[in-house]
Image (cartoon, rainbow, N blue to C red; front, top):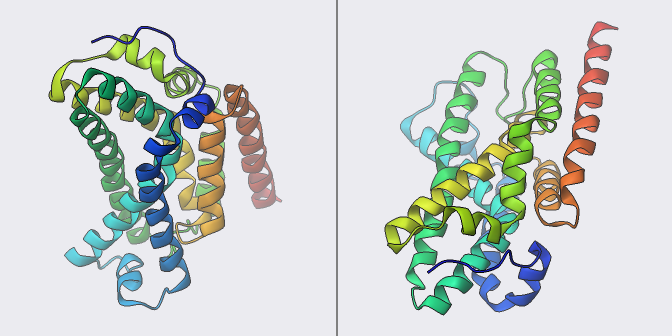
Length: 258
């Protein structure tokens, strides 16, 4: 079965499939609840495991930090992936193969879980190098300025534009990347997750600038990702955000040199 049309805009998809969106919204809400709890109750045993005080991590620390990153990525990225997930679910429901949607969604989450493994490793490396504190905020002003500048420059790259285009056009992606069967749905989920990762990895790296226990910072980055993908003409947000990030990096650097 092949999709037949280019399909509606992301926000139109959301309005037309409110009921199907409920499980995804609830999953994202559960993730946000977990993050808020961790930020507000930092003295709890689990929160302390997620914020090791030194680089002498135990296996339990690694597991807890990974869970934190994985839940955070799901909470941040699932809302902006709603149009793709709902469009895919609609097509498979019409074809009588609703199980394919679960395979697609699982593959999408798997991509961000793989990113969470890398983020966990990077957090440990930065802490071991004394470049990050237990709140997962980089302590080197130079590194902070570099991360802002890199994220800003990336907003202007062809890779950013191409990946954002795929994320903003669910039916366009399905027209060109459709695969049959459950395995095909898994492959499609991996490919869409890869596009999403390619679009957002630099913004996610800024979590090390504001800290992963800073709920307002996390929410701001998630809102920017959603705006790029879901808002009408959201592709214009990317270069504007790039200018802001480069400017922030330059101000930070000027403050260092001054």
